[in-house]
Length: 317
Image (tube, rainbow, N blue to C red; front, side, top):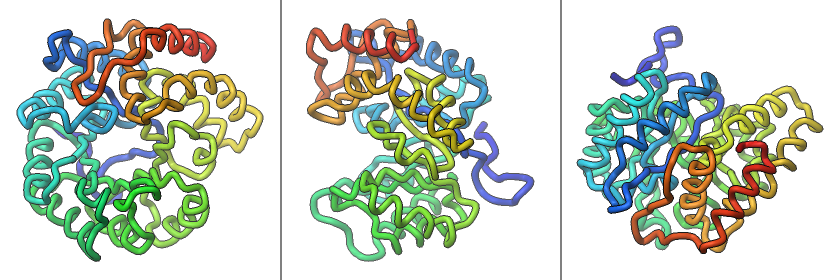
C-alpha cells in the first residue's frame, strides 16, 4: 500500500520527503528483460540506510520511457516488495499526453506508489508550451489518479522549463507537495528559491543537480538524485554538513566526490550517467552488469575501471 498519502498530523497530501532520496536505475537481464532479482538486491541495499526518504523509479536514471506500461507496474510492485513497504516509492510519470499520463499515474498508485513525479510533455522541449498547459497537465494527472504529485522543473536550457509564475501556480496546488528543482541555472535558483519559499511555505524544495550539487545544497530541503544510489553515505554526510552550515565539512565531501562526479556526470551526454550509475552499483556488489535498453549504449571499455577507481577515492568501495 502507498505510504502516508495524506499526512495525518498536518492534513496535507503527501509524505515527509525533506531529506535524501535516490533515483534508482532499472536493472535488466543480459537479454534485456527487467531483472526482478536485481531489483530485490537494490531494494535491500537501500534498506541499509534508514535516512532515505523515498526512492524515485522510472525516471531518467530508471529509463522509464523505455518500459512498457505492464513493465512499469511490475517494477513498482517489485520495489515496494523489495523495500518491505518501508520506503515510499515515487513513480516517474512520463507519458506524453495528459490522458495517458493520468492512466499511468492511476496504475502507479494501484501498484503501490506513494507519489508521482510529473515530467513535462516532451513536445515542449522543442516547441515550448501554451500558457496554462503545464497547470492543466498536473490537474489532469491528479484528477485521474488522486496520486500526490511532485512538480518537476526542467533545465533553463530547454523550452520545457517553467517560468516562475507557472511554477508557483503548480507548487501551490494542494495535491502538489514538493518541488524537484532541476533548473540548472544558478541565477534562477538563487533568485527564485526564496520566492518559492515565501509563496509556497511548507513545500519542500529538492535539488537534482547531481553534477554540481554543492551550490544548491545550502538552501534546499533535500536531494532527489541518481548519485544517491552509489554513494548514499556521502549524500547523507553532505546534507548534514550543509544543514549545519559547515562549509569545510561540505567541501571535504564535495572534493572527495569530484573524481567520481567527473566520470559519472561530466560525460559527452548526461544520459550516460544512467549507465555509469549501473557500473557504480557493480562496484558496490549490487549489480552484476550494466545492461541498458536502446537508445542508450554501453560506455567505452575503460569506463568501468575509471568508475571503480573514482568510487575507491570517494570511499564507496
